[in-house]
Length: 331
Ligand code: 5GP
Ligand code: MN
Image 1 (cartoon, rainbow, N blue to C red):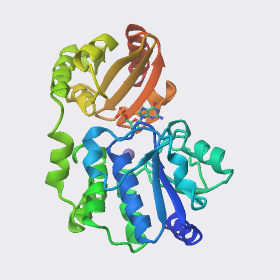
Image 2 (cartoon, rainbow, N blue to C red):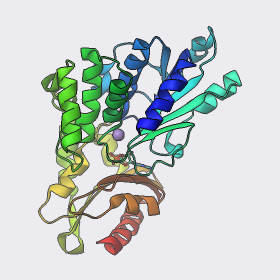
Image 3 (cartoon, rainbow, N blue to C red):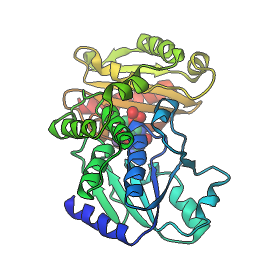
């Protein structure tokens, strides 16, 4: 880790322009860590652009201090008018298949091969890139970004501290998941020292949700059913019900899956959502030691031991049966 951060420091001395990016469908950690990394690199005098594959969800937009770009933005090429980007920093990117098309877009337009830096905390990360700063014992990419800031002697602004705090907060499930430990709490403490305001960040992310969210939550709690003698809990969302409960805008389901493992004696929780007539998305959670990353991986997905996900071909009924069969073998 120290060695790879040193490599990053040396590489930074050679570059002026950096693209910072993250995985598709950015979550709180992805958003917080790209914004925090931009602030740090700018303090080091770099010209930085954040280029994302997908939009930042509304509830994290209060963290944005200056515009970020989307790879689909028709004006994106403007960012290249004053020279090439020599480096792309990926944060929280877990696997190559989830990193989106930022690198292809950049190479396609510029013909250049930037230095790729991979900063992540997923055990499933395959270590792509030239400089690899991966530590699966870290709660969040944001915690790693803080460590990088400290190693590079960069003082965080209160705003950057809020951004990174949001990453630690969301990836630890408000300091409730098993990745809540001395390191993640110490990181949170350092961020508060640097000016983060935990109550404001938590309020904006968790207590200002759309009314539709609560209606959806009510519906989904009603779909929960138990399998495997009460050790597995499944909640399901047919596409038609999703549309009826959330007619417009991007549906927010973040955190709802956690209720599946808050039922007494449940060890594996599944939130299964029909996304097209023959595709479903599964979010998996575990409590008590079952490794859901292995379950997701065997079905083409990935994640962490306690929180993972995958996309499955088939109807809700078919994919539920397939998932339950795989889960049963791991109980
Ligand atoms: P969530 O259930 O919150 O969508 O995802 C939980 C964790 O699993 C996250 O850390 C996320 O990175 C990972 N994850 C979710 N879906 C996928 C997937 O389709 N492929 C991979 N590789 N990881 C996933
Ligand atoms: Mn993360």
